[in-house]
Length: 338
Image 1 (tube, rainbow, N blue to C red):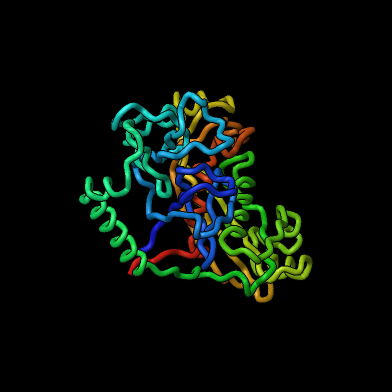
Image 2: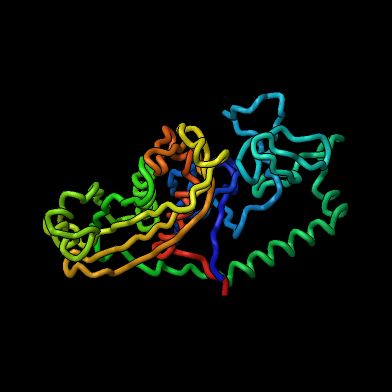
């Protein structure tokens, strides 16, 4: 069984992660994991992380670090939202919390690696606590034992497509159909980022558009002749080329009202990416995916959607991220439960 992985810090560490927050795992090696931290790839040693198949629904209780920016009125501990990673003060008593940023609800839970606060009457001696709550100790032992048993049956499977034999790869800016603007350029950048994060050590040469070369070799899209010519000109062993197609656009108020770039629209985007050998011109890998989602900051120009957001990550980042995640699945290592 395969699936996405998530990770959070076990305790305090000198890495750009918020303690208690869960982050998506992009790739795992024998010693470290590559995490997606707000669309930035961060390498973290595995020993510092707690891995899970999905984030827990409970808020993490985190001891306040020395240089924390949270209000001092929150006290020595605060909670971290399991969904959006926002911090919040702890409520009084075991009540459900609601995030002010994403409206996620859940119950605070002690973070792994943190210690429980002493009762108000003062610290409890170890001999007393040992006899007062044997049920809690047994439950903790059972959880730990079951976790070890599950981990023993998890195997890291290498990616289906290993790019290291190619060493140096070219990437042509994706083309787009039925749309204008920067959507295809943003998708090309995200594709390059995922490739480099999934397989460190490879080199991706971003070649820009290939319109002039296509006209010269007489091809409508990157094919045998274009790939071979790029190999001779740029010294790459293989070339990636992608095509995006926009269909079924619907906007709030109808397309007639879609005349300003701040309106939203629901669109379907199909993405196909090919990898061609620059020696033979043949296709050595191909993947496609589609997604339907609402995007922002679009307009209608000449009967076509215009993606010209000043902040593409906010406007249509989730849609592009989902497509790139699907088409690059063959390049990532995955954990398999046997």
